[in-house]
Image (cartoon, rainbow, N blue to C red; front, side, top):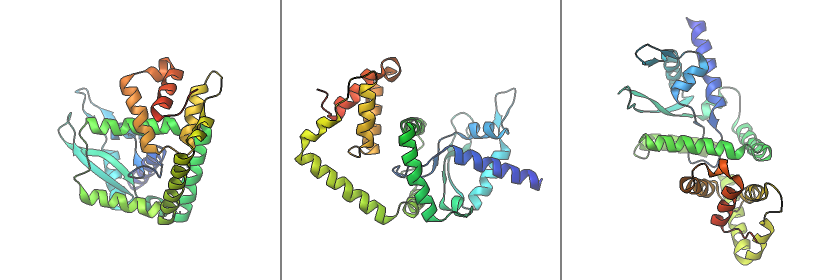
Length: 254
C-alpha cells in the first residue's frame, strides 16, 4: 500500500507539472489547467460506473497528501453535477519546487528561459489560449476566488517568492520607458507593418505581441474580444483574424 501511495504521488506530481501554467505574468502563478477527472484519466485511476458516476479516490488521496505537505494550494467548490465539493482550482506552491532541490534563483532562471523558449518556438500563444479557456471555464462555472482572502494572500505570497521585487521594478521601468518613446515617436509603429507574404498579418501580430508594447492581459483581452465577435475566424480565415487584432491594437497596416 505504501509503494502504491508513492507511485500515486509521483504520477500526480508529473501530471501537475506537465499541465501547469508557468507564465510569471499571470495574476496567480502555477495554476493547473486540467480538471481533476482528466488528471485521474492521465494517471490511469479514473473509474466510470454504469450509472455514469466518476470516481478517482486514488487521485484525491494523493492530492490531500500534497496539500498537507504544502506542495499545492487547492480551492474546492460545489460540483453542479455531483452536488459535492471537489477540487476546482489547483496551484503549485514554492515548496513543490524547493522540495526537489530547486532554489528560488533556479526557478527564476528557469521561468525566464521557458518564456524565451515558448516565444521562440511559437507555442506561447497556444499556451496562453489554453489558460484563457481554462479561466473562461472557471468563470462559467462560477468558480471565483475573489472572496477567499486567505487563499488570495497565499497565492500572492507564492508570486512574490518567484517574481523578485527587483525584477518587477525593472519591468515597470522598461515598460514606462517604452511607453514614453512610443508616445513621442508614434511613427515608429510603422516599422511593425506586416510584410507581404502568406502569413503577413499573423507574423506582424506575433512581432507586435513579442515586442513588449502589449501586456499579456491586454493581448488576451483583444484576442478574446475578436473571437467573441467572430467565432472560429482564427480557423476559417487566420489572416483576417490577425488583421482585426492589429487594427484593434492600433497598429498601422498601410
